[in-house]
Image 1: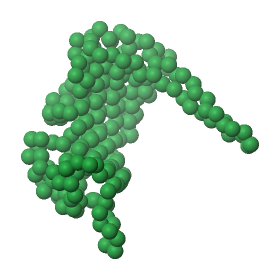
Image 2: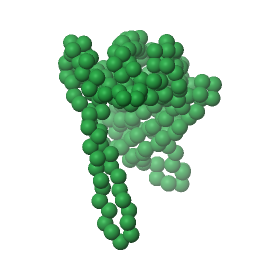
Image 3: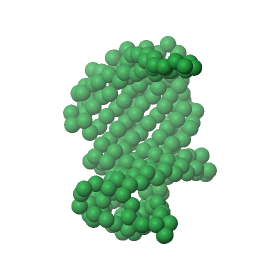
Image 4: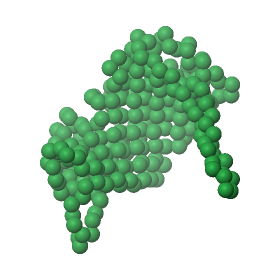
Length: 247
């Protein structure tokens, strides 16, 4: 395992904080309009989130056509002027996206907490039922062809009797952490491109099913657990040679 530490040039392209909720009965999506004036100063770009439902009826000897139901407005995107920071206020929950450049968790968390408090002040959900913390990393290696085992500790393996030149892979593992009852999906994606470098996506999606009051102060303590798990995955999946690229 590589030592967990701060990286000066971490390869994070997107960080995502997500809280799913149990909506209160009778909540009207138009209530989010009340918060638009307070959001506009820092999030001047506001877009609707529209939903739809697709269903099929299967009958023998008949062609089945999809039935598409328009669910109308399901929430709003609030975006900064550069579109690098995005808050989603939806009927079913809240999502905070921070695109590259990423600074630090210490900067990200207070902003997410402030936005979450704004969300729940209007939505007033009955409970928070699932939380997730996801980090998408682009691992760029300055070489056209690489030995993946030099850079990744859990790279896909090809039997030695076969050619060893890999042009693409999609490799996903789900890990359960019994101590804290947390889960993490770890996805590694590579597709060879006509470039002088090799880019592998390391997507770390940690999550936890919960059932607590939305204003419970322990909510973001759970996110701290997810962050610790995310860091363990990142530094265990990469070799020291790879981590050295980002220091």
